Amino acid sequence: MTKSVILTPAHIDRLKGGALPDREVPGLSIVVSAPDRKRWRFKRVIAGTRTIVELILGSFPNYSIDEAREWAAPLSKAVARGEDPRKIQRMERALAMSVAAAHAIYMEAMRRGDRKKLKPRTIADKDAIYTRDIAPRLGIRVLADLTEDDCWDAVYDKAKASKTGSSPSRISRASRACRGARSIVTGASGQQASRKNMI
Image 1 (cartoon, rainbow, N blue to C red):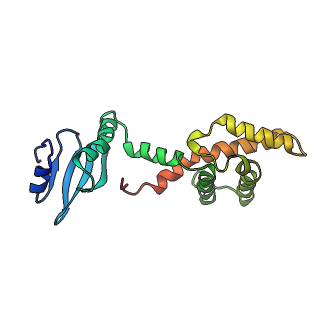
Image 2 (tube, one colour):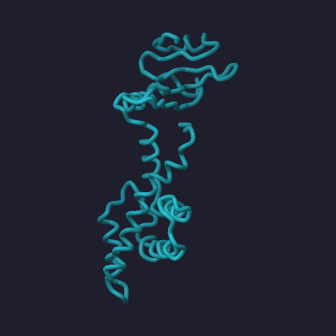
Image 3 (cartoon, rainbow, N blue to C red):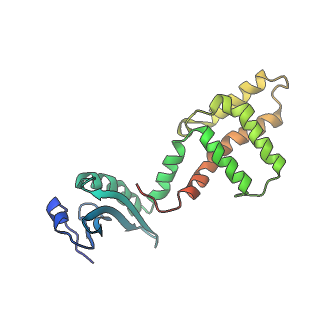
């Protein structure tokens, strides 16, 4: 195993093959990926597991040594705590999407039967509840900013405006649909991002 060094541009320029670890941030290294091409890699075992996290930032000098360290430092700390930073990143990406985008992923998962096989009528009802009761009020909202109170407010406001009133079954269905879109997006986006991440 190559001994780690406090990386400098001179170290990187002299590197002709293999990888050179950075002593400043455990797991960070500069790797020769092709002739005249060197890229930043984070590779480290999650504490208490045998799981290896390997992520690629990009090439040097497009990303400087300082930028690579800034990128890798939180990854290294997460791994040292026994956390998988890829899961955290997937969650952050998921929560940055809108309710409408989350609902689309939710409905794809429902149609595939990822959690359980649903009847076509049930799937159609879920889509109709979202379109009628949730999309007009919350569709453009970002998931990270959405609270359960927002869901309930939207459902009760819709029920008050409806001729049928606040039917308990309708409120319950609409609330489940709203919360379901938020809960399933993490799993659905995780499946989409299960391939090796380029960050």
